Amino acid sequence: SVLFLSNSNDGHKGRSMLDLMALLGFFCWMPTLALQLPSWVEVVAFVLLSHAVAGLLNVQNTLSHFFQPIFYFPDKEGVGQDG
Image 1 (cartoon, helix red, strand yellow):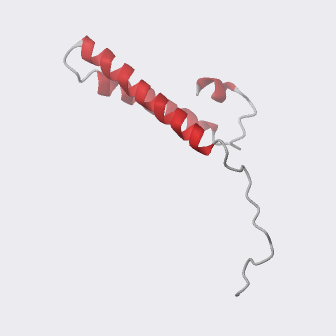
Image 2 (cartoon, rainbow, N blue to C red):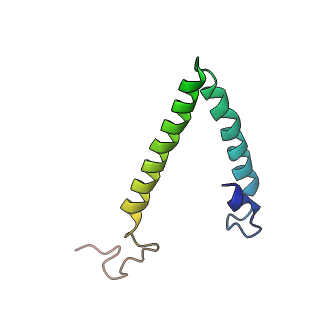
Image 3 (cartoon, rainbow, N blue to C red):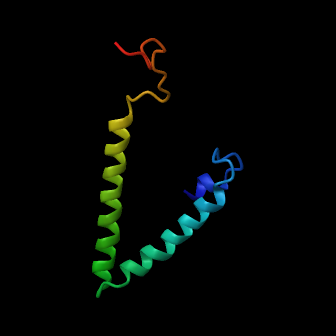
C-alpha cells in the first residue's frame, strides 16, 4: 500500500521500486477498465463490487493462514533416512 511504500524500513531489501511500479500500474489499469462501462452507475457498482470481493478473499486468506506456523523446522531425525 501507499503507507507501506512510505516507510523507509519496508523489509523488502530494495524491492520498493517494483512495488511502486505495481501500485502505479494498478491505479492506471483499474480506472481504465472501469471507465469502459457505459454508465456511471455501472462504474461505481463495478468498483464497489470488485473491492468487496477482494476484501472478502483477503479475510478468507488471512483466516485460513492464521494458525499456520511462520517458520517450519522439520525434525532433523528421519530427514533423508530410509526406513
